[in-house]
Length: 473
Image (cartoon, rainbow, N blue to C red):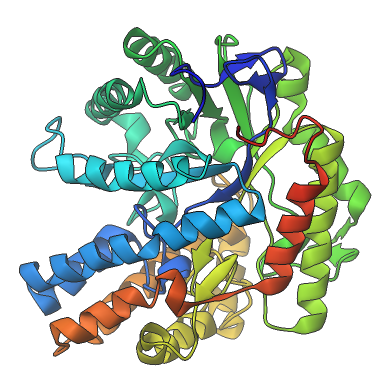
């Protein structure tokens, strides 16, 4: 533990510990734990829709048993020990607001959610690993996609003051709870905001920062830019003790990515392209002299050894760029069913034995935005794309344009939601013992390590030891 209870703080372009020594936070995101995502745990559509459907099949009590068991198994002492052995000193923990309050009882805090969060922060702290608490799903949804638990394509959070009031209240409570915890590196209060007009997010940050600082003036704030943490023009001032967080996914690392180096969607992507993208995404931070921290990045993997070797090279090049700029980072993501995780559920284990064929169907239909090549069932969607190109040629919807919007509405919302009952039905008739086995498939003992990725990250983390890389002391 640190010598005193003072948390990390910003000092110019660096984070420093209570002794004034620089700390470079490097680690992973714990996606899929307290904010479940379809590509991470295999369900379709958004989390709350899936939970409702599974509850309808299992009944309230048995569904609660399964999800509680899953939350316990997904991250435990062995996981913290593995990350520590790799050299990780920080875990970004995404959470869904529904663990801390409910829509039918807004503003009333739910202690069970905080107990779960306390457990993992404690497990990590025991190994000298800091946590960054990341509110990944806000009431009303702060962006247009599944990872904010959004069943639509509308980010209603920015349209309703009530939703904003609830988030300010939640963070006031959160800050009061963790204000004296030295292993909480700080608070990441809004993941990937998607304020279409960009007029609400800046004033909301002003309000939120003031409210949190009144409760906890010491902890670092990690603030994402608008448009999925890419646009920092919305900030009207540089708040004290704040890290402005960029996300830095490589174009060639997506499911639809081409060869590396090579062309993806008409763009040549190589090491220089990655560096230009990083320079563009961190311009605000460098101009303001604030710390560089990449809150999310990382390629997806295909199972094809040749393609995956290229994906590992993308990651090596990105890590080398971050090293050159003394930038911290949080790789997405630690654990899943096989697309991206450092470890993943065993294909021969109970969960993938039961849900593997369904996950294959989702992949065939491209029903998960993260993991879709946008080419699945292309012949079926081609007439609709042609229709929109012909009838609305100037249509350019936020955030990524017409082609992405049509795919989101048809493939990733309509088709994905149509698959929810099929996923839920796979739980029907299962005993408590069988439900426990499904949940325990995500315990580290039931997972497979992606060894090339483990080795790559471990080597990268070791390579900076003793040079201001921020190993927790």
